[in-house]
Image (cartoon, rainbow over all chains, first blue to last red; front, side):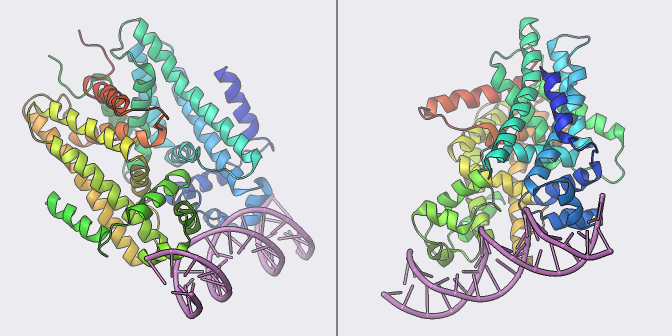
Amino acid sequence: MIKAIDETRIENTRSNGSSNLEILTAAAECFMEQGFHATSIDDVARRLGATKGRIYHYYSSKTDLFFDVHREGMARLFNAVKPAMKGEGDGVTRLGRMLKNHALAMMESLAFETVVVQGVHMHRLGATTPAQRRTLDELMIIRDEFETLFKIVAYEAAEDGSLASRDISITVKTILGAINWLAIWYRPRPDETEVDREILAAKIVETILSGLRRRE
Amino acid sequence: MIKAIDETRIENTRSNGSSNLEILTAAAECFMEQGFHATSIDDVARRLGATKGRIYHYYSSKTDLFFDVHREGMARLFNAVKPAMKGEGDGVTRLGRMLKNHALAMMESLAFETVVVQGVHMHRLGATTPAQRRTLDELMIIRDEFETLFKIVAYEAAEDGSLASRDISITVKTILGAINWLAIWYRPRPDETEVDREILAAKIVETILSGLRRRE
DNA sequence: GTCTATATGCTGATAGAC
DNA sequence: GTCTATCAGCATATAGAC
């Protein structure tokens, strides 16, 4: 089921045959720095060293461009987290791997994932046309599927006895919040390495898995 | 020090002698539902059952209005969290009380606190005039002071041995993220009571303090 | 496939009546 | 203190040249 959705994404993202990753990346960076509404198409074009004619050739509206950035961001999260669901360890151990990969993806694709966070926020907003509203609903379904990945493993963790909590839904929302908040405060340092990010991700996951209170 | 900042806020918020809580609340709700840029002054006026003449009589720009909503939101967080710093219990116990009050304030003043989250996000954005940039910087200092409240108690918890983690800064950012994420997903149900919110807050705090992994 | 030029509409902000 | 009327600027989107 998840796989089917993932394939749908790729279809949508690349419906014209070319990926336009250059445009998507420039747009993601603008949206990250200024937000959706404050970003003009001219801003994105300027970042590309082009004019808006190029952008409107591929995307029929700014909203559609935003949605495609969102789709790409979700795709990267799925690609990071899904492989960590299976494998060795009890449920909580696997949850920890998923969270770590989620955190690393947030850092490595910060611009795209910041847009995803904005998109979730935008959910309640009045998306203009019915077609756009439909697309936004579809993106939120994908978002829910992502949350479901964590719920599935959390249920497995509850069954194998490794999970302390009983309220899976609230627990998952809480821990995803801790990770997603990276989009607000994390900014890479100039000299930052992959190892630095691994250490940061490990610390965050350790805090989530073990809690604040020291165990005797 | 914190107290001084709090008083500064009250001065700024009520510099004209009247509190204008009606305008602030209407603005907060619009900003929550549509975001800062997508909200027009006419939207806020419409929600008030008035026209924008009324708003511009008190606020010289939309940005100033946003900042005052942000200030009010921060003030409510301080008022909720500061009393919980002192009192009985070890450091982690007091941290738990602070987090619970924080979560309750998020739910009870959802519109204002959603604006605070937006403001933090907006920090990197290009605020237009130098005066506005100065105000935004000032708001971020208040935000940092808020985070510092948690760091102070976290240090105390490290010293009394109740805190497991050693990296205070990352730990605090992680747990505040878990709480702040409420602004994204929490929406009150029609029949919701104070008790419901207490239960939700308690569950979230329990997850943060004890962690996911069951203790033997 | 990308550019220039332009139409069109919206919104922040102001001026002045009441 | 609030309203009506209005201006000025900006940003989305389109049309058509190259």
